[in-house]
Length: 115
Image (cartoon, rainbow, N blue to C red; front, side, top):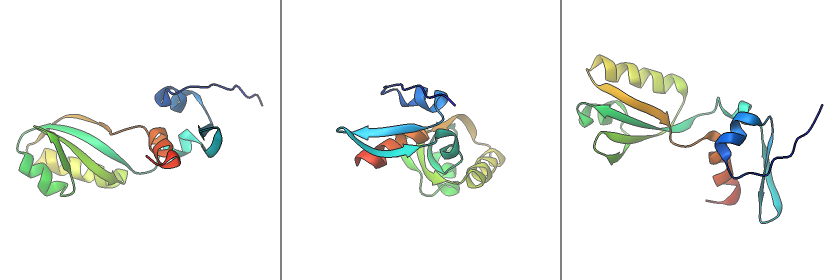
């Protein structure tokens, strides 16, 4: 085994590179995260659609509008997200973009430092 220490604020890069990430705030260890294990957990998503916004709100009632055709969907399990996407497509909504609202490592960081 080998250890390489990387001090970085680029959480996306750390999530791709590291097996374990230590989150330090004000000189104190807050938590250790294993990014690959955390990837399977539920997380909020941003979705952009072309079509009737009301259909999206019917399928995902807890979605928060962020702009025309742009929404944030609260934390979902992957099977719930997939079922909702299938329903949107069935109803004729074009999904033009879907991505996590932020990385899982960023979510852990926010929880650890109280943001």
